[in-house]
Length: 466
Image 1 (cartoon, rainbow, N blue to C red):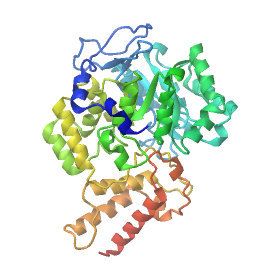
Image 2: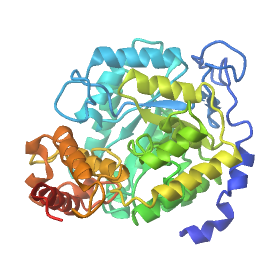
Image 3: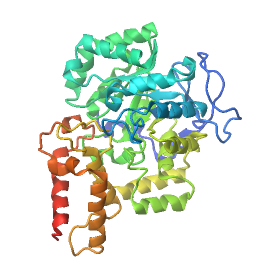
């Protein structure tokens, strides 16, 4: 089903603003199912009060800011996704406590996150709070063929509840539909083994309160699942959405799908959207210098990240917006944006679309720092290499020749930053081209090709060849 077939569903800029309406309203008290909302006391819209969205199937009041447990802090102060360091459980507890105290009640994890340790850490942190104060979302992350059997997939599902220390899941997602071989892989993971039927029975039994999926890759799988909505009755779906991907996702990478299309397909069926990658792997919090200047000129007190979070949160069909928050300052900045949400005006929406068009002039590599390509069998830090290249490109530190203005400054900035960001033994020069990484990349980046290109560029700079 192509975008052109769905023109009647595309949300125009004016429709976007008109339909925001009461989407930013703050709701407190008890939901239809009696679940309490942990928000600061105060009148509707009062500063410091979290914005909530109502789940249409249960009446639950879900915080617009969701805590993504994919980038939990390590004992070394970094994200636990970035190496072999253990998760800093004390800091995770502190972040979770602060989030709950300030109205966040949606926590998203997976058996695949933080080298398989996220669910365990999440379970420890959340089990210290009453069960009716939070919603847990996790995923059936049966990516490996060894987990495609009915027995292995059910074992993974049951282990999630054990690690999370719960006897029911609020939200369960089929993880990463559309990746790999697209429809064939989806059928092997969820249909031929009867797992989707099993999960629907678990929902009927109440052990899963909401059943949905997260989408990456082949749009034919996304369209197929929505075409079976009357049968599967999806309670929600998780999609990648931000102001750059709204209209340019497919232009950035032909295998991707514009967020405008994905959102409108869900909205036309009344399926709530959970948003991932609102910052596009950090790219929208670390925008090119000229873009950052424009954002600051418009709103001096607002961070670049808060613009992106406001964009995602202003859509009325969005139930919650996920953020992987490693440090307290990340959490506090996001809380300021959503406590309460100040929906975008029509003029602000147009402004962000202008910023997106300007950003498309930069030929960046579409890496979202998801780390699905890791670990590299040869120890290469793939995301760090790609993100350093993007950062230098955005800042104008990718000189083409020795004749370029400011060549020496840009050359020095690139090489010094590369040495700081990526240890020598983890740099692109060690890539053998085995290509174990590319099949796992949701953005379908030719990772060995990009690594070899960057390595050749680094060697040219080192030799000062123009």
